[in-house]
Length: 141
Picture 1: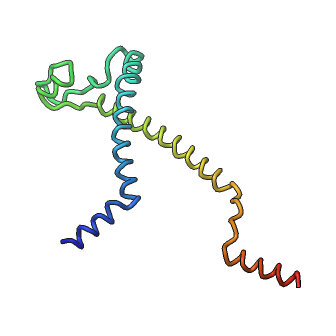
Picture 2: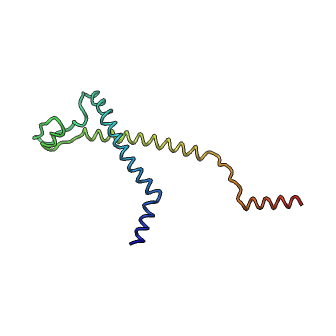
């Protein structure tokens, strides 16, 4: 059991695993922000342009028993095709994909600039210093 615990600690504390965990948590929070931007800012504007309705209440009744005008009530009455919710999710995806595209492009550009920078010459090792001293001593003779 002790060996397995040590193995697990090595795995869990690897840089990649910790980085991935942080990325997932930040991604979840970022998703909520984008969802709010779409749901609270973009969709009301798009809905106003397209007739003043909120997309989330766009649905097609699939049953004759559905008479409600709001999606929540319609779902209680029977089967509905909630295409407004689907449109909202598609717009969320498009916005997230666009933001990630821009972010990855910027990161790629930064990495390319870093790679293009000339490396500073490294300090000579102790062996090289010693050999240089020996060479200089031999030249003086």
